[in-house]
Image (cartoon, rainbow, N blue to C red; front, top):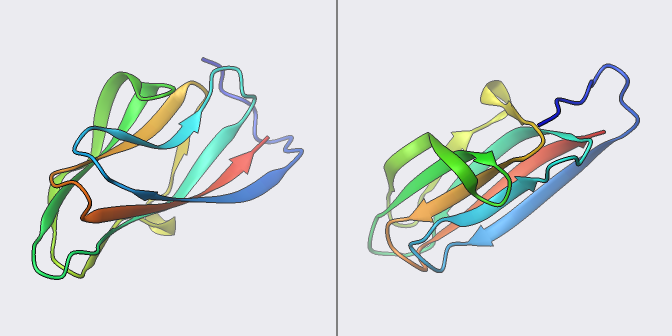
Length: 124
């Protein structure tokens, strides 16, 4: 796993993903492939519960390998998101970097209740 030097940045692109968690298995949110030559600065992760009557749990993990491989390290672990509410897991004040060959995944306690929005800077 390389750690690209971000002092000599050639490009920074703002990226966003919106992911509906339709299963209770880990779902990939962000992936930084091995040898991508990029560092991803994760700016925000927001989880919304679109169910009007029931709470649902969320777990967000950073994985030590791309495509949800390797070891899962929790950023948020089994946090209840109330009905019709949102949870800010991380924002600009708690941003972090995702190096090459790492990924972020979400696991819902209940399928089809939660959506996750991630925003990041792709630095190369």
